[in-house]
Length: 85
Image (tube, rainbow, N blue to C red; front, side, top):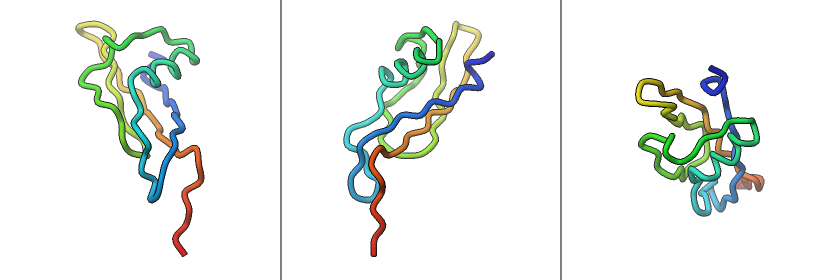
């Protein structure tokens, strides 16, 4: 399954120390998946909670009652993290 091998990246605004302003929602993930040709909706997400941290997070997607896959969500900062001097 091509979906299981998918990694999507979402760039978010961050503040001091890489803290996110807001969170990454299911809708943002759906938009990125649609750009890659996957047609899903929020019902496909199982136990999803908005992501509030940078890094790589596994996201479980249920295709039907018997089949679920895990994709990788890469949450990155859209502004450079300032180094402490």
